[in-house]
Image 1 (spheres, helix red, strand yellow):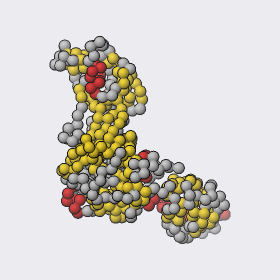
Image 2 (cartoon, one colour; image 1 turned 90 degrees about the vertical axis):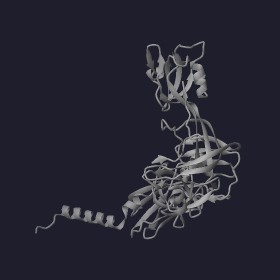
Image 3 (cartoon, rainbow, N blue to C red; image 1 turned 120 degrees about the vertical axis):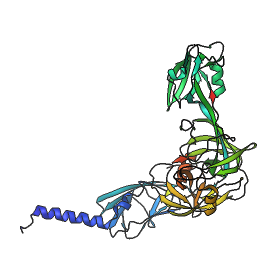
Image 4 (cartoon, one colour; image 1 turned 135 degrees about the vertical axis):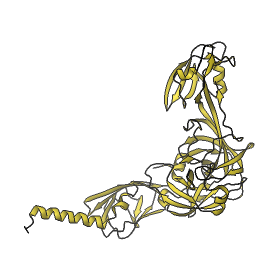
Length: 455
C-alpha cells in the first residue's frame, strides 16, 4: 500500500476531528434552541446539551442574566456542557449571547429578553361575543331582476366577496341599513354612486349604478352584506389591576368569507351553556349558549387579532369554580409535554377543571396559534363533549400551577386532540407584556341564524 500523502493525512485529520465533534455535541438539540428566548425576571430556563466539550460564552450587556449562577458579562466565561445550562433573569432587559467552541469557533448566537413577572387570573368563563365590523362586509352577490335582464351591478363593477364597503359618495358607512338607504335614495336613484372599498388592506374606488328591482320596486346593486357577528367562546384571562382581558385564542372570522373581521366595536356578555352537541370523527361538536345581554354586559372588545379578542372588562361575572386569585404565567420555555388541565364550562355558567395531556410542544420563534398539541384525557369531559368542541376556544391551559396557553383548534378527524396557543402571544397582543384545523368559535346568533342584508 502506498504511503498517504501529506495532503491526504490532513484531510483525514480534519474529517476525524469533524466526526469527533459530531459525536460529542448533539447538534440537533443545540440548533433547536430558541434564537430569541424570553424568560421572566427571577425565573430560570434550563437547556441540557449533554456534551463533554467546554464552550466560551460572552454577553453584550452586564447584569441582565446569569449562566449557571455566574452573571453574564462582556468577558468570556467557560462553561462545561456536561451539565445543563441554567439561565436566570436578574433584571429587565435584553442581552445577546455568543457561544464559541475553544473561544474561536462560533457555534451560535442567542438573544435573551428578561421580562417582568406577570400574574393573571385564568378565565374559563363562557362568554357571548358581539362584534360590529369596520365598514360593511360583502359576503355574496345576488342577481337583480330588471326589464330585459337579470344582473348584479356590484359584481359587474368589480366589487368582490370579502370587500369592506367604507363609504358611498363620501358618506361613511356604519351599518347595512345605511347602505340600502343610500342606494335607494330618491335624489340619486338610478345614478352611479362612488363606493370606497377596503380590500386586503388597500383602499380602492368603484363606481356602481343601482338598478330598479322589478320584484321590490327598490333600487339595488346585487350584494349580500353584513355588519355584525355574534357567537359563544371562552374567556382566557384577565388582569385584576387593569381589567384587560383576552379570549378565544384566534381571530373571529366571517362565516362566509373566512376572513378576520375588522371591528369597529364589540362587547362581551355573560352566556349560559344550555346544550352541547358532542363531537365525532369528521363532525365538529358545538356548545349552544344563551346571551344574558341586558344586565350582564361584561366589557368592551378593542382588538380582533389572530391570537384572540382583547379589550377591557367593566366587571367580571361571579361564577363557581375556576380561579379567583392571580397565578403566574408560564412562558413557552417552561411548557413541557405532560399532564395539564383546562378550565371551561359544559353546563350553565359554572367553570370546571378537566385533565389534558400536552403531547407536543413546538419551539416557535414568532407568534403562531398552533404552539402545542393537546389531548383530552378527562373521561367526564369526553363523555359530555366527545373532546374539543366549538365554543371551547380560549379555554385556559394550566400546567404546574402556571397559566401557559389556551385551546384554539380541534383536529376534525380526532376531536379528542387539538392545538393550543402559548399564553405569551396573547399577553403580548393585549399589551400587558412587551417583547423587549377548524375554528372553535361558533359565529352564530343565539337562535342559530347568521344574519345578512340584501342590497
